[in-house]
Length: 226
Image (cartoon, rainbow, N blue to C red; front, side, top):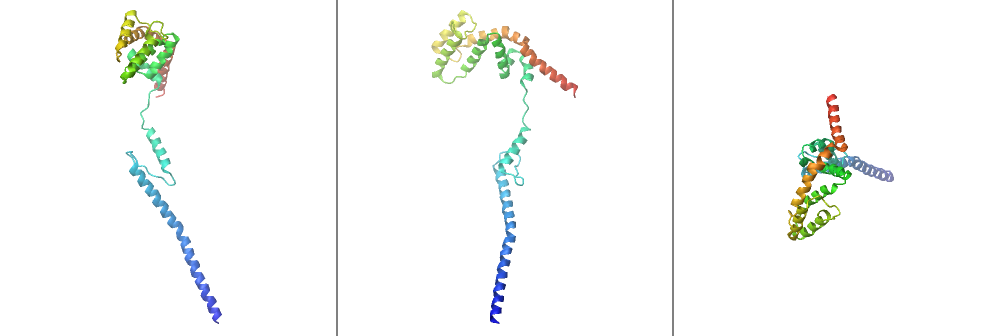
């Protein structure tokens, strides 16, 4: 009789223990879900605090913070100002020589044209002078000036520009006390030469005419389809 009661008591204790363990296991997923929700919410809060955008970055379900940044970048692309292509820009170049020289694409296209006429040294000298004027180091100014003079101005220079003897001598004397204006006279001469001689031929060239025809054709096509 005693042995039967002892066995029954042991069984009851084991049943209680099993019930307790089952309860713990059943509650674990809920706790994990709460922890995950809290973590996601906390991440969203951190992103909202650290971002400099005027809009709020929210984490979607199962989305990482890196994915959020990529999503926001894609949104930002739609707000960027569209840029004109070089063909559309080419119409501006015929307005004046200044319009051409202010355009990076224009200078590159004009340089390619001058190469076909074996006169690219004039533009290269003009560009070198423009860069020289930006010099801030007085110690390097003299060496830069002599290098430009030897490459473009002196007699028999590798890329000798077409300037008169008087302008060449004025430029030579300016090198004794080099300043950012020592090439102004020579640069002005080459600019005038390009504007009056090379520039008009460039506007009539097949390369430039091809660019402008593309723009006109594209504009005509758009009007017909609207």
